[in-house]
Length: 567
DNA sequence: AAACCTCGCAACCGCTTCAAG
DNA sequence: TCTTGAAGCGGTTGCGAGGTT
Picture 1 (cartoon, protein in one colour):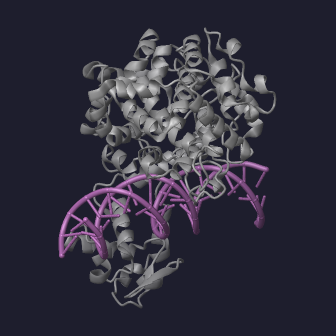
Picture 2 (cartoon, rainbow, N blue to C red):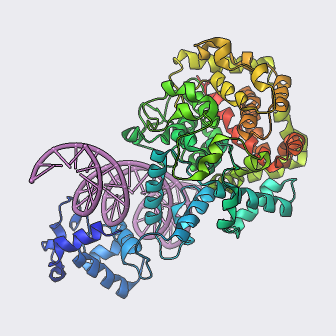
Picture 3 (cartoon, rainbow, N blue to C red):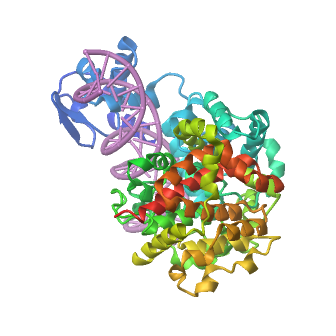
């Protein structure tokens, strides 16, 4: 495997070994097909490394050791920038590098690690001796594309289960109260220790994870979400993957979801940095940002942003995404059969693990499965909000206040309306996911298996006909009561549905004002907040942590909603 | 046989973080 | 405290190889 370039280098410069000359005019300085950049000493070469250059670099490192890469050029006559030298050394020349294809064990480990860390390639590489971050990254990106094409979930259900198990385990050890933070701390301390749960042991659970809270992805645990997410999921969320130039790969469905959040949040003011960072840490970007390279100057909530969030969340609800298919932006992965999400029999795929896409399984597993706790996101969240929690916990009710704010409050409603109007004003461009808020709701409720959410809360489309966006948000969700009712109606075994409700509940909060938003974030990680949901969660065997995280994730919503109110 | 397409890998770019001055 | 440079990280791009039409 990795040898095309190396091989090429060798092929091209087999005679370069004699070019160790340090003469700036030597072939070392200009050979190869790529141009170079000039620095004081001449043209810095770019492009594939030659064996001669490798030799020089190796020689240099032998003498001077690693580091001070910028000095390489000066001392060795190598016309490469320090960065290039470091990269070359780290990825190809340093000893103990393991070459060749990843072993199945390594692949499993990568999947696990990615589920927990997200695109933290360097950290992942630390767990894979002899492997480089670049290698892992390439592997993952390749894998993503492959699975995307195949319509497979990014992560096998085993990984979800494993994460769940670890989550539960840690929860047990840390206690539910404040477990979130505590656990996170632990996580950090252990630097994402890989769980000891044997991968193979999880095989038995294949197919029992019908629904994973893909919501998480949106917020912070994008990775997990993605992973857990079914094919549908990542058809919207790309992963992790592409951020800037995403349009280029319009087919890479992933990007869509990601983008949404970042896009919106990026324009938020400093006070929302926390949310922003959190979101960013997950590589969230707005999918159909007209100009992916620029931060959207427009109020988030006003446009896609709001949708993005919703979209992201609701992408989790596969069953109802069918109708959305037509609305999918070009960015969305074309090969993903969105329309089939809701169908009981998705196209036969390579892996049976996809079963979890289709039918709901044991509720317990599902919810936790998506717990972002183990995602890099979680880590970031904890980090960011640790301070908040410590203080908030002192006045426990404070954080809970955010959760007790009645969505039905006039202010909230108006805010929501504002958001909603903003969306409309912007033409409710086909959201990355092709959903509007209403649609989101629609998607989430129908999921209910045992509840009557569908009947009681008809899909937004039903309510509004074809123009979902024109439907005032409050028509869908008018009060906290209603929200809670829906919560109750919803089968908790459907985490996505719950999260959807959660989202609504918090979205109203966020729009209230920035303070509330901040509180929500803090609460998200705090005991208080999670405790507010604990009862519900407990009834459904949902981990309080999961709720706490859910809250956390959705605490990001405020930023989004608020943006709509920005001048 | 040629054109086209996809894949995989190496390398580059831009940004962030960190430490030294 | 601020500045600056080095290092690190993640995302993206370029290009050859191999497969398909």
